[in-house]
Length: 113
Image 1 (cartoon, rainbow, N blue to C red):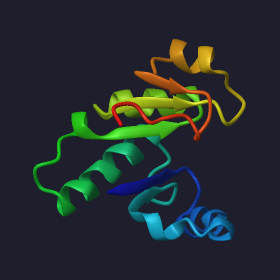
Image 2: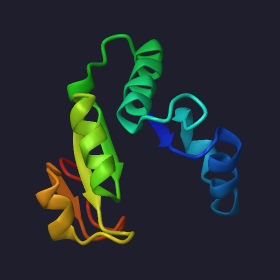
Image 3: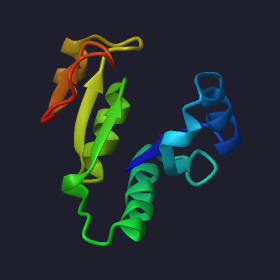
């Protein structure tokens, strides 16, 4: 089950996913229109996920992000932070931010799979 957390408004976030036809993979999400706080957005998305899978705990949630802020938000929500160096931050910077796992790209094998 995949969810999306974005600081953008939902319409803008969904629009960004359209060219690659990615919307179909994200069943739920939390967006900048829900809260300006990234950690709160992550908690809101986890809450939505638990409505779909009632045995889910935050520790079973993997949050993939490309900034130290994403890593910090995942940790604040009690989720497993996974950094991916697809943006402006290196694998080293994401590891220092506290990523439990750090990938060089989205083509790297996902941890535990």
